[in-house]
Amino acid sequence: MEQFIIKGGVPLHGEVSIGGAKNAALGILAAAIMTDETVTIENVPNVRDTRVLLQAIEGIGAKVKFVSNNTIEINGGSICDVIVDYEYIRKIRASYYLLGALLGKYNKSQVALPGGCNIGSRPIDQHLKGFRALGATVDISHGMINTSAEQLVGGHIYFDVVSVGATINVMMAACLAEGNTILENAAKEPHIVDVANFLNSMGANIKGAGTDIIRIKGVEKLHGTTYSIIPDQIEAGTFMCAAAATAGDVLIKNIIPKHLESLTAKLIEIGCTVEEFDDAIRVVGTENLQSTNVKTLPYPGFPTDMQPQMAAVLSIAKGSSMIIESIFENRFKYVDEIVRMGAKIKVEGNTAYVEGVEKLTGAQMSSPDLRAGAALVIAALSAEGISQIDEIEYIQRGYEDFEIKLQDLGAIIERIDSEKEALKTKLKIG
Image (cartoon, rainbow, N blue to C red; front, side, top):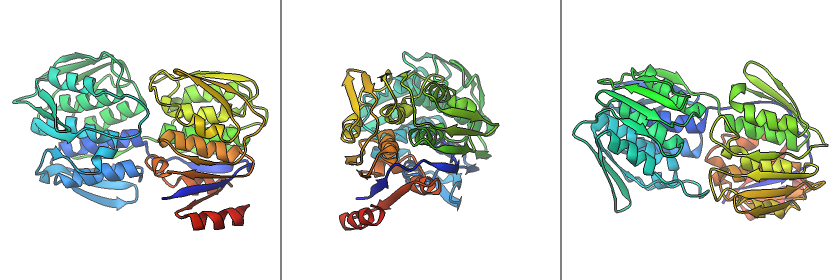
């Protein structure tokens, strides 16, 4: 079981380059199988979630070739199965994107119910509602979601709630449906725009991605393409928070600053200096952070995936802060872990009340999910003394070379895989 050993109290300094967006990559990798021609995808983050999805894609017969660490060729012409019951696929949420991709291409799909981080209820009813509106029959039995249609036909779909997953999934299926489809109350996240742009580069006809109404004109077939995935706004935001929490000075490169506006505004509010460039952001922290209030909302609001990291920063900000989580109900599981470090955070329902403390102190903690794990790392980097973070496989689901990038910024962090090694590392860095 791998762990991080971190000695805190060192301000981060330097430059870090951000990888491709994990959430965009998962939709794009699934969509790549919708043509029989070869698709080349660049800037793919080499993280656990993308590797598992690629194994599942290979498992149904598609050809996957790593051109380099972050460039992948996929050819879906050799797919021989529309049943995805691969043992690992249950571990990642994005397995459901294969439903829309296979349904669109073959008019049928069968995929195991998805897993992922346990951060709250994430029902797939809007996905299934969308598939049914396109003329598919859908049922769930024996842990599998089964969809089939004689012919998908465009429809008018109003999502009852804003759902990133459902927007991407139904958009994929509708690309190859007969006629026109309108998706209303669609999600507007940057990775939805990226998946739509990718599908359009394959010959799809999608307009309005990034707004709440997406219009899709069905085409007969899709073709090969070469496409580069957008930078990961959550990885970028995580390094921004790490700079803030350690009173550091970090230039975060290869990003789209517009995607980070809600976080940038909050960091400026609490006293950080933030400088924007065309494709980079510089964050200069301060030892005199101030409190603020945060409410998570669908894009362009403050992202739920940045809420735990922001909480880690606010735990050492002067005064009282309030964090309202309006997306996922189980997103405060990291609080008990940060409290071990001396943080004063009280959770009531969907709200966390944070009373800033002068400093956190190192502790042994366990990562409960992906973004919570990143928050614990930020807290440990700002703390006095040595921390140990267990269950870091959650963190590896969404961050490529996380500890290496932090080391390059001056952080004292080591990844180890045994208690003996942990003891040795603590003595070495202590």
